[in-house]
Length: 268
Image (cartoon, rainbow, N blue to C red; front, side, top):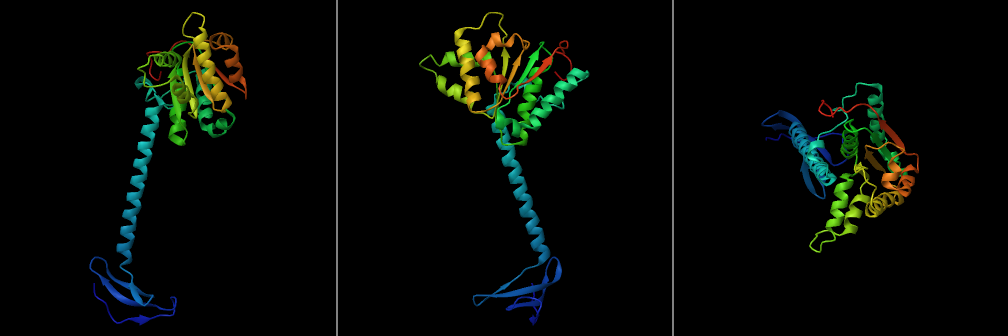
């Protein structure tokens, strides 16, 4: 890069001069010279600086995108969503009837307004016939809130929870009962599936465990999504009236799934 005789100009702050200079790549440009603590600092080619800044910005964007992807992968991993439902989204839910469209739109709205819902702990019940897409939509809610916010979500079946807690009674278990319960109370959203699957009356152990989870989330004002093949009238008998009362507080949203099973069809 060559330099030519320096010229002063009144267009810049005192102590600043400009001189013509030449960039090997981009040709001639005006070079500014600043006097800082007795030393001269010279600017480089503005086009080279622009290209370097764009490269830096792109690198930062890629780094940020990578961090977001890694954070999302960690969230999805901790969500414990089964492989079969890992890709279930609102876009993949096939709604052909008015009732199905209503269910889809209500779940979309619940996810879209989750920041407000999280403040009140308002719960959502997806109740009705098997094979109607309840689990699909509940998982879609979890995916949506994790993708669009810092919220966390966990999906668990009641059977898996009970089995995990029973395993803690073995002295070789790596987890304690309190740790398992804490992992279900602390997430921003809990999806609790397969409630009332058994035809038998729930045991005291099952009712006590469900109450510990639902009441724990109720006290922390954290919303819970309940998924069950039972209807609204039969649900309290499966979870206990105390649990049902906690879920109702704050204006619980109930979506009935009364159409025929769509299992085996695309979208479910």
